Amino acid sequence: MTWYCLAGETAAEILTDAGFTILIGLVVVFSVLLLLTTIFKIFGMIMSSSLKKDSAEEVPPVVSTPVVDIGPMVSSTQVRNGISDEETAVIAAAVAASLPVGTAYTIRKIDRLD
Amino acid sequence: MNRFLEALLDLWKQSGLAQLMNFENGGWKNLIMIAVACLLLYLAIKKKFEPLLLLPIAFGMLLVNLPLGGIMDPQNNSLVPFTAAEQQAYVDGTYEQVYPVYLSEVSVYATDSHLETYINDAGVEMTVYRDGDSVYKVHVNENGTATVQVPFWQHFEQGGLLWYLYQGVKFGIYPPLIFLGIGAMTDFGPLLSNPKSFLLGAAAQFGIFITYLGARAMNLLPVDALAFTQQEAASIAIIGGADGPTAIYLTSKLAPHLLGAIAIAAYSYMALVPIIQPPIMRALTTKKERSVVMTQLREVSKTEKILFPIFVAVVVVLLLPSAAPLVGMLMLGNLMRESGVVDRISKTAQNELMNIVTICLGVTVGATANAASFLQLKTLLIICLGLIAFSFGTAGGVLLGKVMYLVTGGKVNPLIGAAGVSAVPMAARVAQKEGQRENPSNFLLMHAMGPNVAGVIGSAVAAGVLLTLFG
Image 1 (tube, rainbow over the protein chains, first blue to last red):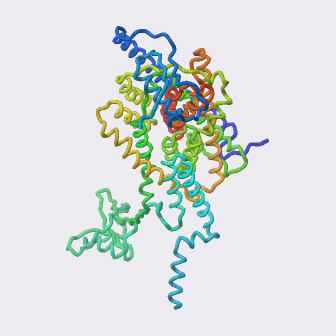
Image 2: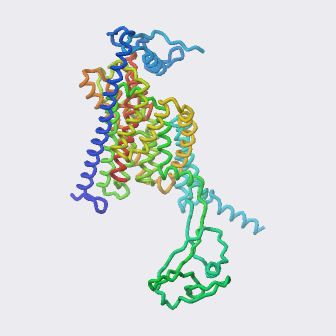
């Protein structure tokens, strides 16, 4: 069987070119992002340790796993009290961000004030 | 009465409507394009499919396919040789210049029989080159040659409005400006608190490179109309990055004739992320994996957030200079946001600038989709390959998520890997919804935002690789 190709290109050349592109593309993308991962992982560790030193005397240690619990839900697309799941997720994340790292909390109720 | 009817007939013949109805001359193609534009307008307005970009794209497509509108006609610059009278006036020094004049210089021997001494109207003696009625200024050189100056004037025909606005796409100006706005709007905090997310953003670029293979493999088929060059294949593949500005930027550099089809495919699939991704996510994960509740993200300090754009810009631009326009502007926008000292320009980048550029980008990209370039078999193939790119990108992210799930002993929910295809924040919202389907008290949104914004950086890096290889 003879492969039909564009002028000047054989099937082997096309597949070699594609294989080379996949290989070099993935290697470069992963290398760059792996480097960034490493940099910010190290940076995060440095920042966390310095933060811990600062707040060690003020924050009591917490061991429990933080889980956001807003009670039973019937459906993932449910809207309760005019608040969608997505809004609940954002509010939960905002609450988490405002508390000291590792603090366990439970959101029992969210009300819209309008 | 006859004259009146003839005038009416002439007017009709010169109207766009007559051109549209002239089916033998391809008017039907324009009608199809107008129908496609109306369909996209419907999807943008009624179904709210990426309306911010799909609406101007569709309207640009509509405008350019209305015959004789000339809204995308290029500016016509041409050089017109002087007439004999103009040449005489030019030699005499009485030529009144209205348009820019260019001189073309031709060398002849100083002994050429066409050379003669001439005294012009101002009484200045000079050497000229006479060829019949034409007379040219001459500069006699010391080496036995003479330089004949042949003058031209520049004819200038104004182009259409959208052609001028299109220069922002052609020269790669709009996409980096959009990235500036995206950077100013994006909180990279979730990514910083879990840097492993970078890898999920990288894995989701798998779709780009697999699609490149798919597009190039089309050349093995015995149909010329389905063959893609390396540049075209790379431009199609970038749809898998799920990042409109990146797709437009790369395509404008590598295969501008495919811009309309690729932009429309990219934005359409981004709007369809909630439909395309969930089946792939469910197929590749188990119920147990989808139910994983991830631990709370650590707090990210302001210093980290300020240093992040500087580090990313330095690392990426040093390693991959071709990604500088996109990554550089993305990080500049983010630095403006996080520094907190330039609130005014940060807000401008997020709102006014972003909106203005979005209008210009959308309408001009739509205007590149004329009947001749869009109504081809390749357009259908681009749409199919775009879907493959999206699907493989999602699968790549989820599969690496599964690897992370195994390596971390079940601490990572693989669903967040699907958000690595960018499409911010739609892909992260899909991960959130899929997670909640299995475990209603699970909130993956902020965890998925990490890979989601990493995907923006990942697709810009992938575009840089393709630009380096094929640009």
